[in-house]
Picture 1 (cartoon, rainbow, N blue to C red):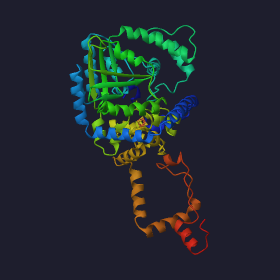
Picture 2: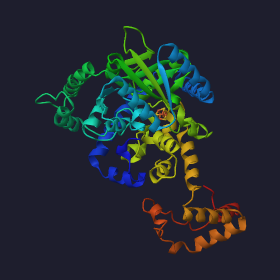
Picture 3: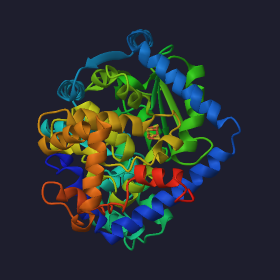
Length: 477
Ligand code: SF4
């Protein structure tokens, strides 16, 4: 994950600052509501949306079940098309590989097309330490880079910024990175896009190495696929002499007919469009056309660990559409930074702990960053049951060393609930003491009642109510 996220506190503390930021909440509310409405309209146009979701789910499940087979098929196809394949078990290995590949070209600058995988492995920082400058070319990524900020959304990394803030960032910082913003830049979206276009055009025409991610990798033909809206990605993929694609091993799909399903699911779920403005595909190298050298770095970095968990592995079906972020009531109020990872929102809450483990505080807190309302599951185009995985991860977190008071409380509750006499006595005791039950619990349970009302103890138990009803003393309504 990006070093920008290192040292982040756990979710509750990070979220507290975000929910107190009225400007941030307003920016997020406006943006997520707009994308949500567009997505709903685009999805409702298709009568077979649920069938498409089921097909997407089935294809991903089959691919993950036979991942070794499809990855080897992909490797053979890339090599047959003139590309080279490199395997990276973790972030350090991937960074070493990419740094060496760039150094071998003799260049010290690279352009990048939006790639969450390279943010996950902190590639920009690793390249920087080797004296290589990475230039982000996606507009939102550019805004994040210019302002030394962190991405806060899968699809729109600068979603937490409004137009006026973006204007200020471009006007103040573009000159440090190349072509400056024009004098008198306004916050009109067209003016902002034009300023970015002029800035990036120079960069594309002078940089010989590109680093990309890929939305999908087709095993049958060794083809990489990128979907994007601005065309900057296509410039990165066609102009430089060397192209290095860093791709997570879960991005493989067996064939082009499988890809067809995702080319329908992804744009409608992410941007609410029928198809993406730019869908670029590249297969190895072709003399006289596009890059002369193509390298594919296939990254594990915790993915095979996730694959070994029969419940959690469904997170690897994710196609990074961001629909789950846009409907999540927790994300809408906290934004992405509080999740402490390049993968925020509901998918981040299940993916990050699986990739990085749950022993450290930020990761251990993420499975709790949800109300379990299920809205994320409803919109997910590949039907990932995010609440189910969250519960599974919570179970994993509480079974680790620590959580002494929680475990003691659960043991006591198990003993009481284990016998009907004990339960009856406990209920009677609680009813008798109801007038002295405090509204807030003492530490360490106070953390729970700080943000919730402790329910009042009813005047009689359910059993008493049932008995009264049976004896005709109660209407039963
Ligand atoms: S979990 Fe589902 S809804 Fe969320 S980003 Fe991934 S594919 Fe999209």
